[in-house]
Length: 126
Image (spheres, rainbow, N blue to C red):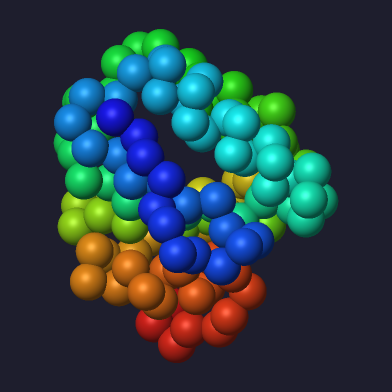
């Protein structure tokens, strides 16, 4: 399931992924929220807190995730993936080299830093 993370800066689309993640999670929660943020701010600051393993994402969820990225390709500003999986953090850090915008991986204990960075603040951890 994907849920909104409450109490984040207005210009950040922040989500928590837990349990099994399906295509419907992206269609009913992520896509409408991202669309509203892009329409309001003309850019996308995106945060995903992974409280589940990547193998819990269904094929349909991965397809919707890819569609989200492609549909908003020119609007990506900052994206943070928050997880304790070091490999995912490193992959996210490297993604800036091949995609528009800035991408950073954060550990779960750095969630508040990740939110601040997504909103446009500077953090010294990276």
